[in-house]
Image 1 (cartoon, rainbow, N blue to C red):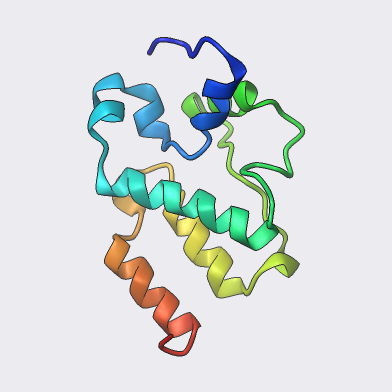
Image 2 (image 1 turned 90 degrees about the vertical axis):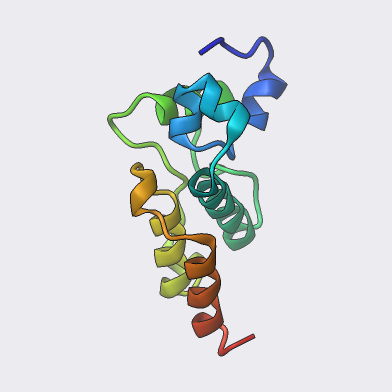
Length: 119
């Protein structure tokens, strides 16, 4: 994959799934499973009220390089006090390294309905 040329482009990739970071064709096309991964990064932003990966002392470029080429896995860190345990569990399911292990958008919606009492 071609490397982004400036730091702003690296930051724009923080919501991008690992498989898309590894495959330019997939990056242009996108998938529902990659959208679910992106959604989980937004969940982290909501839970922490901060930028993606804000708990890491890394630049966006360093984060993207680590997400693209594990091990170890690089994912946002969310303390148990930041959100209800079920919320954190859903978020972690959504950022699974294996796309097929991520829930569908519909499954995420249903889990959130249960979490919020149907709201």
